[in-house]
Length: 93
Image (cartoon, rainbow, N blue to C red; front, side, top):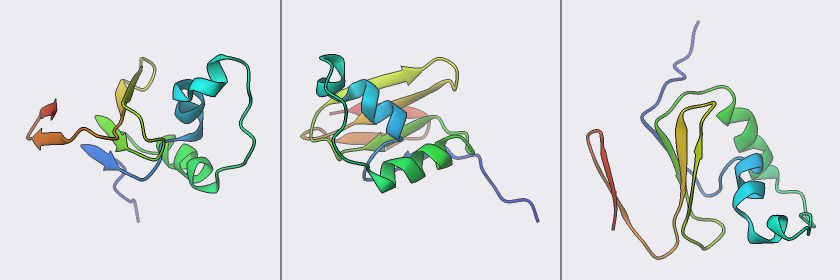
């Protein structure tokens, strides 16, 4: 049985590990992660097996956005803002 793997949006607590590492401010100044995030590792596997327009999460308590050119999808990290999803329109408030 083939399972559906195409979604409009993903809503999760955290993002895939590689995107977390890109958007985490400590990774830009040379500090590696000091812990292994099992959920982010699982999300990394899931991210490689699905297609979606955008991934939303808020685990890191910051407002960040990353667009992956290869996968053609955005990763929106939210903290104090809200996102309105209306059909194909996404508006961060």
